[in-house]
Image (cartoon, rainbow, N blue to C red; front, top):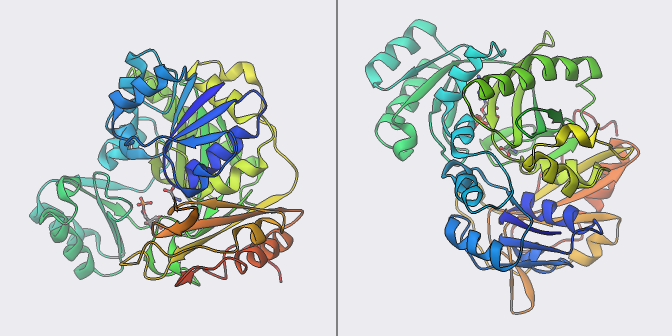
Length: 425
Ligand code: AMP
Ligand code: GLY
């Protein structure tokens, strides 16, 4: 089998790493990939843009590729799946119509309401005055969301009315470009956030082990939001009973609603859930792709061959594969970022200690790295993630932290408290 992985983050390195471990996979091409995928056995990078769909289609045909797996949301929202499918290429990832579930928060909210999926009460606005009136009626805390894709920066959790009004005004003044022409104003939820990623072929939907991300840059969940600073799986909070409810109350109704709209959704449906203090699962958002860094923590636990699952989704044969098998134990993943991230940071610093870290029975997934002149250098905000498996979270995190301490680059930053809810030491 020959597989294309579209994207250049840690998620894509994890996908390529897992795929290349299967004997039936001969070759993985990452488009454009990063320093990790450049140095992975059976894998190579192709210097094409993730948004050059015709170029990717031509590459797939020239290299007799069997499947294209799309990592990031932007190419999905721009219709990569529609283009590649027209060229007769099997794709893991929803069509442009399906990707709206992430690309428009108002669309996703309307879908949830139509499917009676539990979620925060919300209203959508296209003019500031009406939005401000609504904020004054509802009061704070309240959540303001730019409708469109804003690279994870479109959400303001406002603790005061003034903050909420400022966020609405910023959006309508163009802070997020077109993404902010419409805003969603949402009820503030409390509880624990959980990521439930599920694989679907449009009919059958099967959840992966639940994971918990740590989105804030600072220890104790403080400071600005990031793409995710560390994650662990599975999540003890999500009992089998709660997982069954999520399947029946969230995942299946969404698939049914998508089908009723003639949307053929094959790929990941990622539910960002809040588990309220009463233990109720409520959807905060959906993503149309694998999570990053959730994927780096989840895939090392997966026992069923990944290419079998992804191909079955693309070919609408997921039911035939049977239940997904998992390795015993737990997974811990800590992200190292460039100092200054998520604001300004530098690139191009050499990274050392990668082999020494991997010797501790861990996997180092590259995110913002590049391979230049025989050396791996920093090339992004979130630089890499160290993943360790263990019999329990204390042991898994001890390994991940011992390994990350061996990695050096200028201004390396990571949180020391990832997994604090499940670590006992
Ligand atoms: P998103 O970009 O949708 O992932 O939102 C970013 C973060 O904002 C989420 O991870 C939550 O921490 C927070 N958030 C979003 N919606 C709500 C809500 N309704 N109540 C409380 N926090 C929220
Ligand atoms: N880790 C959060 C995300 O992938 O959106």
